[in-house]
Image (tube, rainbow, N blue to C red; front, side):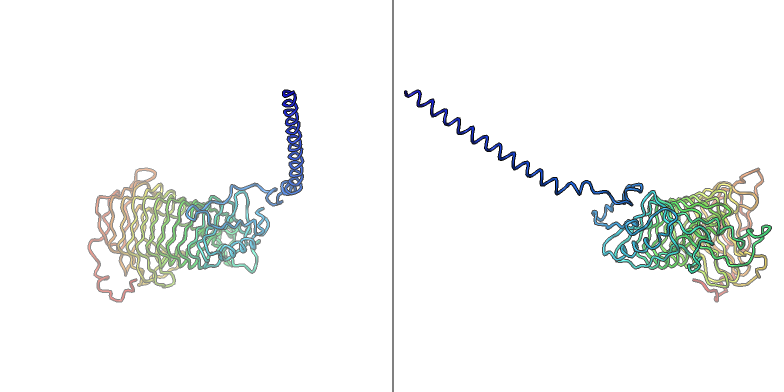
Length: 473
């Protein structure tokens, strides 16, 4: 009897546990099913929503670079978000203007992003500062102007394409390209030898500079490939603290006035580790420039590296403290050149050309104070004063159409303190060594030179000491 009671109690407890367990499993299953039903209605439309057409149809770029120094706080403005198409035909000017205006108003660092895989056609435009914070113009795609003078809007300036005005702390950089589309400009009849039967015809001949910085400071231009500008590729006017790094600039050897980089009234300039070949000077240094350092430049074919031309239209010109070193100049009309017009005033001083390798260069070393683009320039008594010029470690080969060294100084204002050291220049072809040319040039040889230089005058000219009215800088 006692055993039967115990068995009955165990049976009742087991039945109760079974009922509780079954109810719990049913309740859990019912709650889980309701939860899944709610999730389906809440999230599925977001997952199945189609992407934006512009992103879905276009090649996806690698994405804008991160600013490591800003801790990721840089705001990025992709020009496509402002309506740019990037098909090389559509006018994307307004989109770039809106991107610039927006980025320029940001108080912190910002980036305008031009993505890879797209070609953006832009009309002549001025991007105006100052901006609120530092700005990066990141070009990973391609920028191009309208194709030639016939496509250029009549109301737009034909002297410039993209201008950055009163900008501070800006970097123009990227792995992309700037295509100046210059061929139709070069073929205008007013260009040298482009008229009928190889003549140069009169008429309007304005052609745009590709990239111009005007009255700007603390600038970096880095990494870009720039080609075929209608005129100068880069121009810096009235700028301070300019750093140019790893540019690749190209144009055909016969493209007129396509200087790679031109600077005027600009100081604190560094041009490093770049390659330039074109139809004019690789770098041209105009009046008002000082503290210029050019290093590791590969130049040519072209017209070499020039200071000048200076003193045109009887103007005053001042250039000092310029260094060009550790560079190569090849197959060029000139090597390192100083060129001034008769009738000018001012001075060029404190110039150093060092460790430069010449490869088949005509006029590897040249000072030309009788610079003239026509045959009817008149002799004048005033001139820019050229002094304190050091040539050191300049070696290689020269084109025998011209002497390896040419010092053509003013009749009335001699060049002074020209110093030659470790110069070895041999003919590129044949074994006839040409003598250097000197005219009214004073200086000294620190070492023996090849070829020998016997024509430099020793000492200091009395005419400079007695001329108290010289308009020095």
